[in-house]
Length: 208
Image (cartoon, rainbow, N blue to C red; front, top):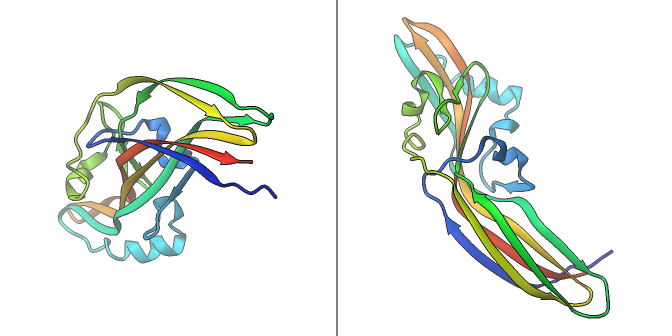
């Protein structure tokens, strides 16, 4: 069994505020994501829905009934490994890596049941005015994408491996909602909003 020991850690921190995560970069495509307290919408069970729906099924003349299950829960994630370079030889190797990419936007939404999502425009939004009923997450602004280019030069020692990851932190709010008009139930389902608060590159050298 190989024993790993971190011998170098470099953090390059880039903060995002009110930007929108690409549709193909939602957290389900991340390499890893952890939420110490709370539950992801994808992990709701039938029993969960049955319990939560009881909170929103009281009929009303018009509008949304919303029940928040997880509110602004902190998550820690790793989106991808940018590169991984091994040195299995007996001498050190000079390694240079050039990165060309796009700084992604940082908001993503998900829905289940009959709650719809409007994908037109710069930011996806829930249909039917649900955005305004989720007060904690409805005020996220938009931002354009930015291209970025940088180089890393390093020396990879014998018997070590250099890894560059994209790490970050964010907040998740989710729950269930039901929409009524003239006392008639029109839509019902789950919703989730994921907002990135900080994203950074993490370079590690580990012994192998």
